[in-house]
Amino acid sequence: MMCDLKNMMACFSVLLLFSVSDLMAEERDVTLSNDTVHCQSSGDERQHCPADTTAGVILQNTTGSASCLLGKTWGYDDKGVWVKNGCSGDFLVGKTDHGGEIESDKATTTEKHKRNETWGTFTPGKGFLLGRSDEGEASLSAYALARYINQMPDGQTFTDHLGNEHPVDARHDIYSHRILIFLMGWVGDPKLVYNIAWWTVNTTDQDAIFGNIGYQFDQKFNLYVGINGNPGSRSMFGSHPYWLGTDRVLADEFFRPFFTQGLWANGEVFPGLWYSVMMGNTSSTLGVKANQLDRKLTTGGSLWWMPTTHEFGPRGAYGDWENHQKLATRFGISTVNSPEERYTEIGADPGNTALKLADSLNLFSTGSLAPNVTVTFADYQILSLDAGFKYKGFFFQTEYYRRWLNGFEADGALPVDEIVDHGFYIQTAFYPIPKKFELYVATSQIYGDKDAGFSDSSEYLIGMNYYPWNTRNHRLNAQIIDINRSPVSSTFGYYTGGQDGTTVSVAFSIFF
Image (cartoon, rainbow, N blue to C red; front, side):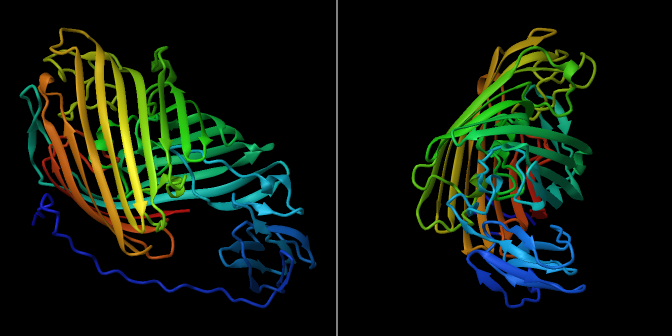
């Protein structure tokens, strides 16, 4: 059965979901003195002492004979401090300043330091504190996604802009799709931050480990080195995994740049106005060795303004989980210029798989622009404009793209000197049940360069998110997509090249 998604996508069913009861830890009375909580345990018992821990917790001194080790014999959660195995002590919970850090004369400089927003692609969650000393701090964060996907119909083919027929490799599978593990903190100086990420995508059998290092001079200027997203579209600025679906919509997946190793800086010029600029190796550095690169660098930048509330939710999230009571707005412009090469010799499969034409062919595959001709070099430029709004559980966002491919070098004559494609997406969502159940719809429209022989593509989708617990970090997501001639082949995302049909996906993810 196929739903008519173009007519408001009315065909959508909600799965029966089970509720989970909160398990409450045993609590006991505590003595509060100023901002100090005294909490004690004896033997093997675990005691939980209610406290406001939103600013974090510091162990001031131990009052028992047993040692107190963070994460082993003491710790804290959203509701208070816990101790066990004989640990007893006085814990400073403090008040908070507007940055969310401990504000107390007893707190050290490191606890007072406010971590600046990184706006990076591989951005961890709050995580769990593993340890802290005068020399540094380490926390652990992770993201995991399990997904079912069914791309229909099976056995179809598509015809490219040169009239050649190709099979559509439609998928039907269940995967522990991708996992991200972060170790982050600071060393030596609270402004000298690090982020080590282990990243795996099982659907592509891809594994990597990255290390980012940065120095946060002040709110107006932060400098980082490592791996990051080229700043060519709004989704490249750390909003993952707070998207409506678990992956990007069609237009964003087609036009956006990818990830590279490089140097970048960002900052807040004045409240609500942010910038980010980057210089890196290429549009996509994943799977590319240093000796394959030429001497040309990729550059890009973005400027975004949040005039009404000076924020757009955590990480610039999609969807109004926060339930803004004042209209939140965001307007942005982004661009990337990247000289691209094939990376491999003619006759071998192209090492550069990031650039797709509007009929889903790889630009660097032999015969993509002319029979038996192979493109070896090209220039890629992207310009995008985005706008978003949030108000009382409603969310709206749109982004327009224009992409130029030119500067071709090939081993034969080509029929075109330049290819210019453009398109946009619209996404909107609301919460029938605040912070519990979200519905959303979206469309992508992609206009291939007609002068170069390319056609248009589109999608219409409807989806839902269910949040079993009082957090947006863990959710069940389901959506149906009606796809018309996908220009994208993305095992990472929802799409396969040339598909003209329906894709169904169901996923569950956790993030901390």
